[in-house]
Length: 115
Length: 113
Image (cartoon, rainbow over all chains, first blue to last red):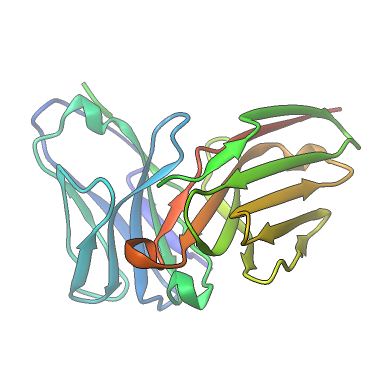
């Protein structure tokens, strides 16, 4: 059972560079999420998707973009990386919505440093 | 708005009990609890629904008081494996918060032999 897989695990970017964080899940979940985790701040929602072709902004979307062309994949794109984007990024998926009481399944995270 | 967890950190010896609280300023539909070990992904523990029900996972249980907009996580006879950061996630019950899952800042639990 692979679950939610994120790549890469670690990445160092220079200011102004771009990159894509990959996320794929093999549970046929419709709902997928991107969170960032900063020390002592909990998890903040960046973007989410309720199905292929449908995405929406979360709490902290600035500086990021997403796409959802398939049910399995939900990549997160960072354009013009800034030091404020140094964080640990988690992708998660769920079978249903929060009001369906579906738990989130998290990937192992990508630790990104922008210098 | 982010729920507030207390305490921020707690240190226990094996076998001791602990309570972690989660308070929200908004009406809640449900509360999620997750545990994250250092360097790993958060792992789902349980969901609490309106009605004050309690749920359990191993020797970990939780309660939800929707009138007070609070949830508490009870760790009984703690084991070394309980160490980690515990997050509550509140799901809003109405208005613009309906269905939105917002995480607290986390409570760091350390269990010593």
